[in-house]
Image (cartoon, rainbow, N blue to C red):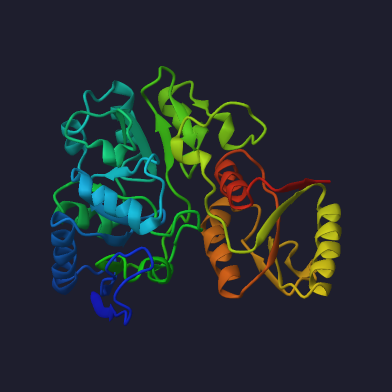
Length: 373
C-alpha cells in the first residue's frame, strides 16, 4: 500500500501560549511506492502549504517542517510552531534547478558546478536573494539558503506546493532533529496540519551549508557533503571554525549556529582521550550517577559497547562506518529521552570528513561540555 491515513486529535482546544491547537493528520507513505493514493495525499499536503499551513515531511537528511517560502505568514508560523528564534534563517527547498534562478539576484558559476555534482542531495547553498523571498524566511538577511532534497516524497510535495518550501527540521527548537515521524508527532502534533510519515530517513544529519556570497566558498555547517568533496569541485573551501572550536572568539557566520541545538533532556558529556581511559572514566562516572539515583546512558561504538556498565548503553555503529554513526546519532539521543535518561556520556569521534559533522552535532547537543583525558 502506498499510504495509510491517521488523525492525531487533541482534546485540549488551546495551547499555553494561546494558539489554537489543530487536528494533525498523519499519513504514512512509502517513498518507493508512491501510488495514486499516495499522490492524492501529497497533493492535499501541497494545498495545505499553498493555503498558508504547515506540513512535516521526510527528506534524506532529517524530517522538515514545511511552509510556503514566499509567504511571510507561513514563515512566522514555522518559527512559532518550533519555538525558533526569528533571526535563524529557514532553508528554501526546491525541486528543480530552474526554480533557483527565480529567487536569487544571480546564480554564481560555483553554484552551477555544485548543482551538477551534488543536487539533488544534502547540500544547502547560500546566495543573494531577490525581492521575491521575504525577510521573514531569511531571518532578516539579504541572503537565502537553498537546497534540492533527493527524497521523492519531498520533491513531489515541493512541486505540489508551488515550488518553494521553507523548512527547518521538524522538531521543537533545541531538541534532536527527528529522523522518524513519531518524533515529529511528539514535538508538533496539534501545532501543524499534517505529517507525512516516510519512515526512517537515510542520512540522519542535516545538510551541509556552504556560503557563496563572501568571496572564498565557506562551510557554515558541516554535513554528509564534506569539505574534501566540495574542494574537488570548487578548489579551496574554507570552514567557519566556530562550528567545531567553542573557544573561538569569532561569531558564527550562520546565525542559527549560535543557538544550542540537538539537545536531549538529560545532561550530555563528551569524553575525549585514549579508549582505555575513556571507558574507565565513563564507568566511574556512571557508577557515581547511579548511586545518586540517576538513570545513565552511554553512546558507544560496536567495539566498546560491551565494556560499559551504565544502565543503558547504545552503539551508533562501527568507527569504520561514519555514515552509520551519522544515521544513528539523533535517533539514539531521542531514544535516551524515551527511556528517561538523566545523565549521558559519549565517546568522541574524529573531526575530519563526516566525523566533523558528527562532532559538530554532538558538541551542540552537549553544550560543548567536554572532558579531555
